[in-house]
Amino acid sequence: MNEFTTYTLPNGIRGIHRQVRGNVAHCALMVNAGSRDELKGEFGLAHFTEHAFFKGTARRRAWQVNCRLENLGGELNAFTTKEDTTIHATVLRGDFARAVELIADVAFHSTFPERELAREREVIADEINTYKDSPADRIYDTFEDLLFAGSELGHNILGRKSSLARFDGEAIRRFIGRTHTTDRMVFSSIGNFSARSVEATVARYMADVPASVCGFSRRRPEAVAPFVQSLSRHTHQTHCLIGAQAPGFDDRYRLPLALLVNVLGGPSANSLLNVLLREKNGLSYNIEASYTPYSDCGIAAIYFSSDHDNADRCVELIEGELSRLRREPLSARRFSMARKQFIAQLAISMESNEGYMLGTGKSFLVRRGIDTMEEVCRKIEALRAEDLTEAAEAVFARPSRLIYK
Image (cartoon, rainbow, N blue to C red; front, side):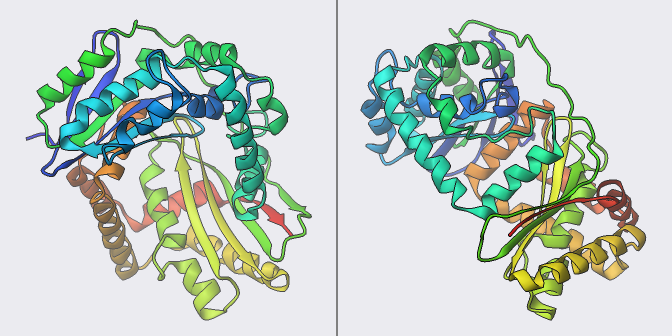
């Protein structure tokens, strides 16, 4: 039996459901619209819109939105990325219909009262200040701004405090009308319900939304020349990112690159760079590698922080490891261990039903298809050590580097 059931409402909103045992349900409305879809002068508007959804609807005031599920022991939340906006809820099984109704209410019937928006501008300004106080977070945005120069992917999701003052209810409605079209929406759910009952519930609250179609397309970022930049941030440590543009969701290198990045600096203590920099040489407490695929491209990066005096040595060791991985495939034993570790990490992550719901929803949103865990495992098992070598050469042949110090 298929692990997932999909459906499409007459207005174009698609749905994906997985039935599991349990008394807790998770659901989300995912919209294929994020900061990448902002026009010039709108930077930060996608994120501001996400906050504004909670500020009142035609039938609820802000406090009623916030208390609707919380009073039942559940929760309602949202987040914005470069390419999507998600409103999600977790409730007991018996409150699932209430969660669907509330998500529909805030997504399609929000009124964006100016009094509430004024307060939220201050909240987001504080969020921006908090973010600026964290060089480990801030360096990623600076790096992406350089790596995706000239592209909408480059700018910061939060935007600037100076821009917030220009965003009002009318600006939000224009942005939603242009980007939050029904052909770019997926409702993802997981819980102890039949697919038929879930579809009926979603249709009850979302089928009357007028159908709409996206009228624009995204521009793939141009390649940029590799760069090395050092910026003075007067930090106690040196913070460094080494990375490059990477494959998107549908690229043949996506899976081997994901495995390669996990080998390099995944969450396990035995990752190559953690062993090399921390365990063997005692140079860095924080060392990690990440790969973020977007619809048509992505970013692969290695981050570390260290004492100022150790930074050059860390860079030397990392670049040496990247050079070796580009030339020499992993040994059969090391590669077999890497595949088993990766599969186990994925399986464990899927034990979180909320994470599973969000992950499958995102895949269905972007790729219009999903892989079962069994299919993912088969694809990982089919990889060769040489695939990782090819991915390393394709992505890390000429990496860029950004340093905060």
